[in-house]
Length: 278
Image (cartoon, rainbow, N blue to C red; front, side, top):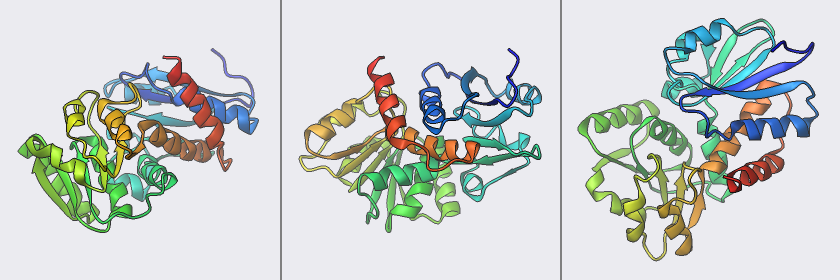
């Protein structure tokens, strides 16, 4: 489809991608900011197809949001990345400059910090992370800014344990590795960050303590997870994956459009409505 004169394009890439709420959030922001002619789409793109997708991008493109499995695969295609993205070798945001440069950033990390702060979490003495995948490395980077003491990471394999030790050293985080078989112990930490796929933590719900601290569950669909539901029922504070998605999207909108602040409240309302419709 031909692009209208003066129009700017953005999109989210990943595989699978049909579930993504990013188009709802970004389009809402464009409308609130009065950015007529701006569009935001979603494209199912895997690692193999990514270079070809980039080759076809024209000067009308303002930026891209990236989800799995592209956050590391995109780095060789860029002209440069931010220190934040370099700290975890992961890019979730690409901005195209007027000069044609492709620059990468990671808004997941400051998005996590912002989501925690919105819920009153500025500092904690200790924390626990459930899982050791790509999101866990971003969680460690966020905890480097929030947690003053030890972070315990619960993993399923020695290979994952070695990876997390490497990230801990790189990010200068005091990390202790624990076996997933003891993951119930994580629930007693003042801050628990669940980074695992849907269903993985369901079995832990029955072990939620009577006075839990704060749970940051990075999932948003399906929501609530069994763990988040039990956590809330026991009076614990819950930060959701939608909170993370919103705050990282706010930063993406501001970077891609050059307009700030992005309309967080309107974006949240649109995201909640879209989830309720599913």
